[in-house]
Image 1 (cartoon, chains in turn purple, red):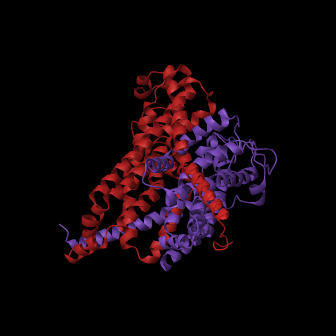
Image 2 (cartoon, rainbow over the protein chains, first blue to last red):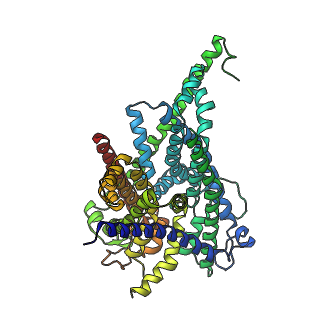
Image 3 (tube, rainbow over the protein chains, first blue to last red):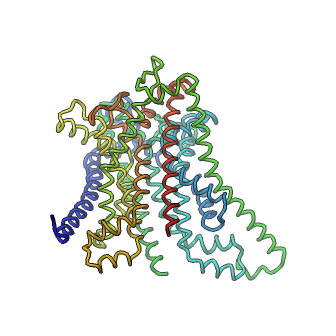
Length: 286
Length: 301
């Protein structure tokens, strides 16, 4: 039987080990992908056209599509999600409607992305006749973004102290004026952090896009036509490994993976983390 | 524009009217969430349930014979594959994630904590294809060589990759729960002479248990729905898993592999939608369980 002190040391040691292991796994995944993929990356690879059979294809259209689809889906999601977040944080009473909306948002957040993809396939691709298209992919991707964005908006709005609102209302401002001029500006850092984190996630999404944006690309780059098929980087990486025939598919996947990791690192480090620090500072100041 | 300038009544009324209309706009945005989730249930459900025109529920749920070219649509091996891989992933990732959460909440020095927080965000941001690809190129060959099995594809590979992918869910929610335990509880335990470890596992973890359970269930929801990473390492063979190393398949991985070749509206296509419906129901049940946990927790306070 171990003494409580020895047990404490042992447990503390194990917790340290767990913490370090968690960091090490992440570093391994990122490092491995960059180590294998960076040598593949070149201007020709990043901007070149993909090849179906011969080696040496690039990922130019996929790179463009990733950002185009991401931008469109955020453009659709943000107004709706911020509106819903405002409703939940500022208006929602204790009633059935609020309960239903909260339950729906939580449920939507756990719906597996493949199910969202199939839903998008029924509605946008088949029913509305969009086919495998950039617009179909963006609209389906919106369903993934919405619940996360609603939650971060609501949380950000709730960190704004109540006396800000009271002061504004006491000055005779209407509720909407208070929200627009006082509450939203103060919640903005939090909302922006949430948006960048969501965008980083949406960028790597695959299962939703395979059956809505498709696995082929347009012949011209950049193609802004929203009805064109829009394979993204993440879909391409999966496609070359699962179905692809090119002899250099491991290289293509390595390069695509490294490109994805770099983009996501930029999203997280350059945008999200400063936002988070700013948010913490603002919270501390109150 | 300031509020004082507008003193005439008509301007004020206009603003109040405006105020009312934006409110409706917000209610509409929020209600859209309900519309979306209901449409998903209805459309996926309708498409999926059409399977039963051609396939009996008995066959779909209790047969593992999956051979669409011979009109055999038994999904048992995919359902059991999903359940097994989810349980195995939680068994692997759960303890590690919980230990990491305790470490972050109570043991790690501030600088390390500041490093681990963005690290958990990055875990979420790494695309699932990247997890799957590294699994395919590193883990699968590693298992093949070290366990002397023919392929290396199977439950074990999928469970390890999923165990890693659910870490951030378990870490962030459990850490919040442990951190939310009232300080006096912890101090009372320490003042009674308990060591830090005794305090952690006799006081903090029991007090944070509802939050920890919630994190585990959300992690399971993520694991059961994960598609790409699992598809790349599980082997995609419609057979029951007899060991950790049998190539098998799960609901989402089977959907993603076969959906491309199936005519929309055929019995084959519909049965894939029925699998999606099963997934949807599993994830909705998990949300209800989480709500239940939250409600009982609220009742005790």
